[in-house]
Amino acid sequence: MKRPEPIDEEIILDNTKYIESDTDLKGVITDCNDYFAEISRYSREELIGQPHSIVRHPDMPKVAFKILWDRLKAGENINLAVKNLAKDGRYYWVFTHFDFKKDINTGEVVGYVAYRKTISKKVTDTLLPIYRKLVEIEKTEGIEGSEKYLNNLLEEHGLTIDSLLDEIYKLY
Ligand SMILES: Cc1cc2nc3c(=O)[nH]c(=O)nc-3n(C[C@H](O)[C@H](O)[C@H](O)COP(=O)(O)O)c2cc1C
Image (cartoon, rainbow, N blue to C red):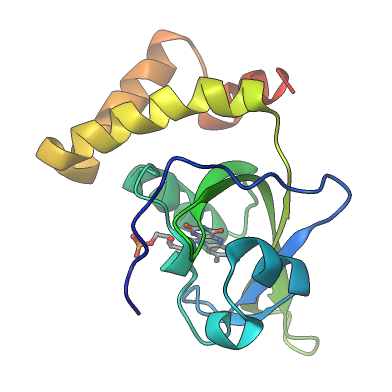
């Protein structure tokens, strides 16, 4: 599927609704709610069966998704603020919480669920320059460079990725 050309126009979410999607262990969308389709401007049929990167925005650094996948594979959640790209090129920010789908008999993780809510502009205004800096580093130094930069930044401030995100979300 052709990638939409991003435009600098935001889609504002309804704060009473959740954007929900289920994926398999590789991040391929296996189900989603109507609100995801409405906001992303893709139909549910277009979304289901596609990798979740269908809504990946170029302002999102690779390292954010590396942290996400490391967490999910370790069976841990992360509350991640994500800028997503809609089919019409507009963007929407979401505060995402992840959950695990487990086989009822074996307890084995068989997939993931993401629940997304709206997020305040104060938070996204704080995060965007950090994300953009990481994207810029990735252009020349790859994900190793952005990971190193992020780890140094956290160490300098005595923070972990979760405490940094918590500090930023307090701006909510
Ligand atoms: C349950 C679940 C939900 C996800 N939701 C999003 C999302 O909303 N936006 C996004 O860009 N990536 C999301 N991802 C991450 C994607 O799978 C992918 O790692 C990311 O888009 C980066 O794509 P790339 O590695 O092809 O560059 C999600 C992954 C999972 C498991």
